[in-house]
Structure formats: structure tokens, C-alpha cells
Length: 395
Length: 87
Image (cartoon, rainbow over all chains, first blue to last red; front, side):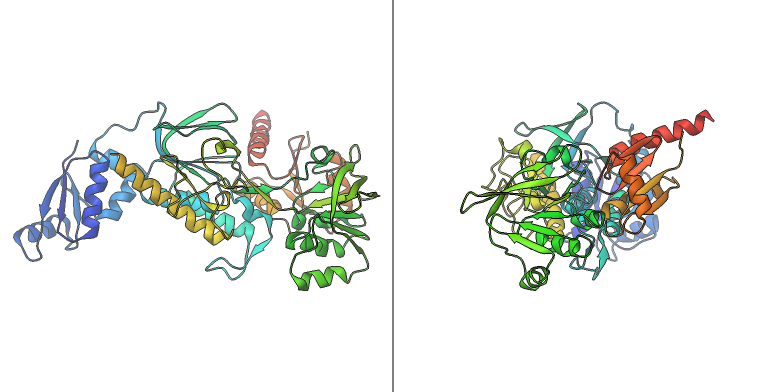
């Protein structure tokens, strides 16, 4: 292995970082203490052409400071320069496997990459719940951006670090309790890691009534902004009583002749939206009603609802159903091992620890309040930094 | 075999845009039908998808995919590559 030399001085944060980086990788080095104007400083300037600290030499080649070192490692150049063999192609042990490709997971990926952790991202999709609305106007730096563009930016940012990603892949099982964590995908492939970051987000809560599964995509939808225009000329029922449900009704008012709104509770969304919806002659609202079933073989033909007060049932003839009854955390895989709250959200501390050693969680799947893109991204960063701290302490 | 790649979409649908960007990134040409405006295309979309009322619907390589599913799109694209090799 080529000889590594570091010129450094006390009290220089990046000198310390460069040294611990090398130590973590098991790379030995000669450290030379430098004072400004000293002989060692003159020698360093001569060899590297730079007077800033730290300066790192591999053999006789100056490679720059700490961030240059990190970039060399990320690009695989470091091993080559050191004359180390390329890492074997057996079952690799990742420093961290991130499950989920929404803002939490991707932000964690960026931070993990910048800490030069060997990282794998496994996700069903990219963007997660961000893709559920058309545009976003509360993410810092973007006063108005289409979600597809924002997601593309997230993806490009992660791509810059060239880490391994498995997108379109579902995780089937997790082993969390051992020192080495194991992730098994639906294809039956397994991956090993020192730490796990769970950033699996939420999904629309299903109605869980007969006919729902069979007719999803055939008139039953969970994406109003996508599919509302397809209901032109059709009567539609919107399930739910919150803001999302009101927005769905509002979208439909432009295209559908008749819209029913069916809610377990009273209507709770923003008053402005409520006023708009309630003043439309096209809209009929059933509060304190539950849905019993969806009727139809190959397409939606109607629904049956029941009054919670009187038990009276009623059939409504509709060709479409938009479901907006809230969200469920995607925490089933870890339900037995980590603590969750009564909503099924993973309970984490202020550093995204789950309570199981080496397992972290972030974003909407956790009990952290305020489900916002920017909160999820911040939590993702924290989870990656916490995973890094954990790995360092294990050494 | 119909080698044209068609995507049926609505303007407010992020998944449609992501599907189109996915195809663009892969260098695959496609025809985009806005089924909010184009009612003939909407009829065709429902016909080829067995009555889907959901976008995007993507037709490629004799396969019709309802919804943006990267895994299935990748698979379907590999078939597209194969067929061009055969020629």
C-alpha cells in the first residue's frame, strides 16, 4: 500500500476529520504537525503547492484536503491510488441500507454518501408521497415547483454520488436485532448492513370493503389530481371529510354531473373549501355514513352506504370513487420488533433511533409531528448522521 | 407488433410526468395523449387497458401498463431492445 502523509495542526477540524476518516478505513498514515512558517510548513508548501491545512499526500502525490479525500473514496479512486485491491464481489456488507425513496430516504442517502458510508437504497419508487400532489410551494428554495420536477432534482442529487440503488423493488422481510441487519426483497435477494434506515413513508388508507381491490384502477382511485379528469360525465363518490376529500370534490365539480361526499365524521376541511363545495348544486353530502361495499364486476356501478346514526342503508349509483380517508404508515415489516404508536408510526427519539440498536427511522413513517417534505428531508439527514455516529462508536 | 410507445396522461398527474421523464431518460420516443382533452384517446385508453380509469396508461411492446411502475417499465423496455435487435 502506498504511504499516506498528513500535514495537520491542532485545532483544525478538517485535519481531525481526515485522520479519523483514514483510521476508519484502516489506512495507516504519517502525521506531521505543522505550525505556520515552520520548516514543516515550508516542506508541505513545496510538496503540495498549498499552504492550507490539512494537506494529504499519497506516495509523493498531493491529493488535497479532507473533501478531496472524500471525493476520491466516493469515486473509487482512493483504493487505486493506494494500490489496494478493488473490493470483492462476494456478499458486500453495507454500512447502511436505506429503505424508501421519498424525501426522507433520499436526504438520508445524500448525507450517508457525504460521510462516505457504503450505502444501498432500496425503494418501490422515487419521490414517495411527494408525487401525490401536482405542485409544491412550501419547500425552501422553491416558491412553486411541480412535484415531478422536484423529485427529478432529488434523484439527480442522489445520482451525483453514484451510490447503489434498487428502485422498483419491494422489501419482503427485515432482520433487525442482530449486529448485522438483513434485508430480503420480494425477489428473494438478501442484503446485509451494519445499520438500517427505515424511511418507508405512508400510503393511502384503503376502505377495506368488498369490491375495492378488484376495482382499483377501474373506477376506484386514490389520486384525485391524476384521475379526476377521467370522470368527465360520470357520477362519482368521494370518500372522506377532510381537506384532501374537499379538494377531490372541487376537482370533480368541473367535470362530473353529480358528486357524493361520504364521510364517517362531519366535514372538517378548510372553511373556504367547504363553502365552495357546499354551495354547488352538484354536490350531495352524507356525513356520519360508512361505506359497506362497492358494486360492479369490471367497472364501478355503485356503492352502498350506511348511516351511523340510524343504521339505514342507501345505494348510490356512481361510476367512480375517489378515496381520501387518510394515510397508513408503512411500518408492517418492523411492527413486531420496533415500538410503534397507536397509529402504527415508528417511535423515534430526537436522533431517529428506533430503540433497536443500529436501526433508525425517519420521515412520515415515524411519530415525528408535522408531515411535510422539508421535515422529512431534515429527519432523513439526521438519521444518516446518527447511523454514521453509531458506526464510528462500534469500532 | 406495434412498436410505437404510447402514453395516456392528464396534465395534473405527477406520475404521468415521471413516466414520461423516465422514457426520455432512456431515450425512448413516445406519443403522449392528453386524455383530459382528447376524448377519442380516452376511449382508446379504456379499450386497450380493459376499462382502466387511471393514468398513466402506457402501451409498449404489446404490453399495457396501468400506473407508473418502474420495475415493469424496465422489463417492458428490455423487450423493446430485443425486438430492435431482431430486425
